[in-house]
Image (cartoon, rainbow, N blue to C red; front, side, top):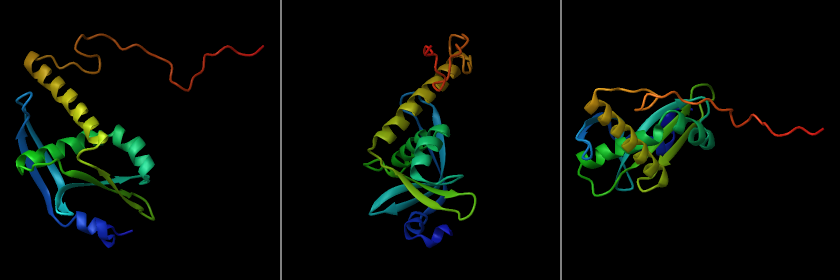
Length: 169
């Protein structure tokens, strides 16, 4: 499917492409940058658009697998934060993912993260956690990995699909 044959996609992509935005995070003082695939207008409001390819463009798969796996909720927050601050908007823009499958028939979907949604709030929480960790690492010079700031090993656990229940006799 050719993306530009879909009216909504054509509207979403009718804006400024590959625009970079720079801002300073007020809580940490760190400089931040994003580069938006497209910033356009939808129903009189600014919208931020990102094009993604995937193996399965169904909403349920994209939301339940890809958004979490690849940090897309944090991306939606960061990009809209940048656009809101740099364009001095009185509202948080909506963020649109144009999702297209990599193999034929190249199914296409548009998934929106509304500016005032729980999804956007979750992205904000992830961003605050990550930028706070980065600030801590920069201040201390200690860049801990997945072992955390106390440099302790993580404990192994059984995955949820493993059952240790008593067997019937």
